[in-house]
Each structure stands twice: as C-alpha cells, then as structure tokens.
Length: 329
Ligand SMILES: NC(=O)c1ccc[n+]([C@@H]2O[C@H](COP(=O)([O-])OP(=O)(O)OC[C@H]3O[C@@H](n4cnc5c(N)ncnc54)[C@H](OP(=O)(O)O)[C@@H]3O)[C@@H](O)[C@H]2O)c1
Image (cartoon, rainbow, N blue to C red; front, side, top):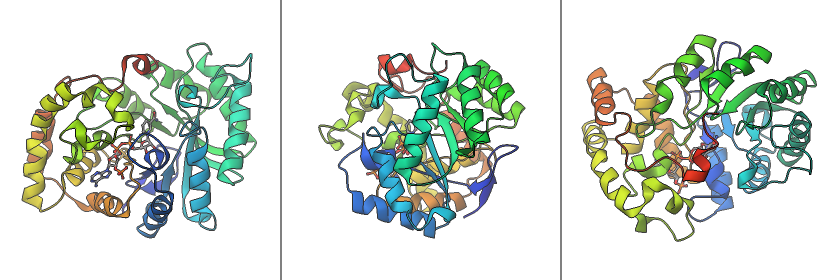
C-alpha cells in the first residue's frame, strides 16, 4: 500500500485508513468477529491508520479496536477522538465536552479502553462552542507533552478555528466529511489546511455507503440503521440522488472495478494530503477499498466526476438538522 505523509509534521500513513465506527454503531448489524478479522486483514494489506472515537457506542468501538490490536499495536497508528457527547458518553457535572479538564479525563479513559500507553492521533470530535479552542487544544498539547498522545486532529472544525488551534499546537490532520456528494470543504477548509500544512482525512468517503451504488433504496437498510434518519437517505431524496450515480458506475465499468473504488480514487486524486478513512466491517469490502489506492483515473474522468457532483447537487443535507448545528464551528 502506498504511503502518504500526514501533514507537515506528522507520520507516514497508508494512503487509505480504516474507519471503525460502523463496526459498532450506525450501519447494519454488528459482527464483532468479522470486524476484528477486517482490522487484521487491513494490517496485513498495509493499512496502518485505524480510526475510532470514544463516541462510537460510548467506548464500545474503542474496546473492540483495542481487542483487535492486542499483539499488533506496533504495526498501526491509532486515531481516536473525544468531545462528541451527543452520541453517548458522559461529561462530569460542571464540565463541558471541550473543557480542558474533560480532555484529560477523556484521554485517560480512551487509553484504558484501547489498552495502550499512547494514542498516536488524538482528535477533538466536535468543537465546543462554549470553550475557546485555545483552551481545549491547550489541554491536548499538555497530553502530547505527557506522552499520552503524539499528534493532534480536529473534526468538523471551521477554518478560523483550525487557524487558532494550529497557533497553539500544530494540528496534524482535519477529519471532516468529504466525498463526491459532500464537497463543501473545498471552499475554505481544505485551502486553510493546505496553507498550514495540515493533512485532510475525509470521513464517510463512500457517502456512508451511497457512492458504492449498493444502496439505491431505503429498503436496503435495516430498520434500526441510523442512515434512515439522514436526510440524504430519505426516500424522496434517495430517489433523486440515485440519478447521480451513473458516471461513477460508467467509469467503474470502464476500469472493470467497483463504484466504491472509483469514489475513493477520485478523493485520492484530489491531492497527496488526502487520506480517506473508508469504513467497513467486512473483509470483502476492505479488500476492494484497499485496491482503490492503485486505481488511476484519467484526468478527464476525475474532471467528469467533479462536474457531475457540483456543490449542492445532492438532495438532502449531510446530517439531520440538530447535528448540522455542531459542524463548522
Ligand atoms: N469525525 C466524524 O464526525 C465522523 C463521522 C462519521 C464517520 N467518521 C469516521 O469515518 C469512517 C468512515 O465513514 P463512514 O463509515 O461513515 O462512511 P463510509 O466509509 O463512506 O461508508 C461506510 C459504509 O459503506 C459500506 N461499504 C464500505 N466499503 C464498501 C464497498 N467496497 N462496497 C460496498 N459497500 C461498502 C459499509 O458497509 P459495512 O458496514 O456493511 O461494511 C458502510 O455501510 C467511520 O468508520 C468513522 O471512523 C467520522
């Protein structure tokens, strides 16, 4: 697997990471043995960036990742995050998710669940509007000084916040949604990252599965699947959005590959600073996704896809209304 450098001051990572959220929450049925086998297969295939958060099942996903990485710790970089308590997890009374004291509590809890001494990439999952970013990142900087984490990341932060945070301690990567159907980061956030030498690790790079062309109707999702609450998977919107898939499917056909691989190859073609973190709990999908790192799209294909997915073309917002309010702060 080819490598990319994670930001100006960061480590080398595989061109694609592995997102572990869906192994424990949100998408489909859980299958822990297959999820663990998927993490092991990823390592065998050269993936060295394994991504989780304390929010995924209030620590359940970190425990799963910790279990999978036992005996393999030295082969990977572990990324985890704190501060997204809307998805579970409790903040002690008097503190809020971005409070410096909470950052220290959350980090210790993550270290314990992961069963490691240090977290390679520690992230703020959502910016806390009640706490100046300097204070939160100041606490994260102390964690680096204490050796509890090595590099820092922000998720879904606005461009101004990224600049302010980076002035306190170098930010190695920004983990925010980015894919063909979610291109809003191209306006301000990606340029800010590039100016500051910060890498970008797109989450939901497969559009939460939609861009794989395997979810063409909401009935493809089991009743408790959280995507049913996402506007883009609303039956009326999905009917519109399915029409966008044609160029991805056509290009996939030309290359004799899967639409998922085309969606990932398009992202990889956006720059060497881009390290997508597709999520899956199945070895078969993982193998397809890893192979996308070797898929070279022609410049005309990259451009055709960009033209087919201009900003605003997708029907439905990328999160339900309430969660949208926590983005871009
Ligand atoms: N920072 C944040 O706020 C944030 C938010 C969301 C996600 N994330 C991170 O980003 C990671 C990836 O995002 P995501 O999981 O939301 O979305 P994604 O990677 O865009 O899509 C995941 C979905 O696509 C399916 N899939 C994966 N590869 C496939 C393939 N080759 N063919 C067909 N289907 C395929 C998966 O199925 P199966 O599950 O059945 O394998 C899963 O349902 C997460 O795991 C998480 O670590 C971060």
